[in-house]
Length: 385
Image (cartoon, rainbow, N blue to C red):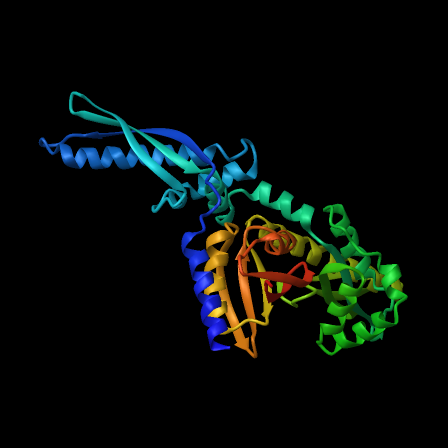
């Protein structure tokens, strides 16, 4: 067994050392920088002019990826000083092409080669390419299920008014929403509602996955009669609390809460209107937070690796970081009984990552995708015959 591990480790290390990365997509940009020569200190002026030219070239490269008249352009202007801080890991080559003097003013023109893929990834991680990231994530976004427990004047409402408000708001923002009427007919629906009343979302997560929903909006709505009376009308108040989470991992992505009120002579109508008022405010805030999260290209995916030893895992993590450009970091959560659990930060979706892993030639072994869901991938290491 030890011999097998050593051979496997040596083979992987050879692959790691000698297999190259995907060729960079290089593009050339130029920049011009100037500095005044003070007291014949030309060297200091050269340094200042060179840095100014480099920043201008890098700025030109960044602007080439930004669509004019969009939020991306606004984000870039706000974050420009931060974005132009060195090091520039996406710059693959720098070459000075001219150095001239005009009186005491020294001017340098610099040419740089930029890996556009790396630059796009960098800007995406910084939340600058908000429009592009939102469009991609919205396109790849799995359907959403809404499951809210609603209590009106001490009684459970089995057809929540708040759910209808939330679903409509999601639909208006082009989310794919599961039909709540279909879900409510399921026996598991009532079980999930009871579990939510006990602050346990696991049954709701299972129900969402059963209906193909990768995302879940859960929450609680409470409406009750207020002690305040005005003009013969009874005031009704409501509170709605929502959370948006991944159904497969339970990771909470955003939360929101709001109050609502409505005066009416009829208790049913007053309670319903108060709940709808609170739900509208809460879901508006929730969607803003969701879309804010969409503005960055980063995505966290939970990965489970089985049938792997610790030395194999150590080498495999290096290979994944090296060969998968979309992976920015890997955090090891646990390792026990030849099963490793990792958190992978990626600039692509979980499905794209799982497909690339499944097709990757790792040499003496392969990674088989056992299960996939929008936030989680289960893999098994298999040696080739």
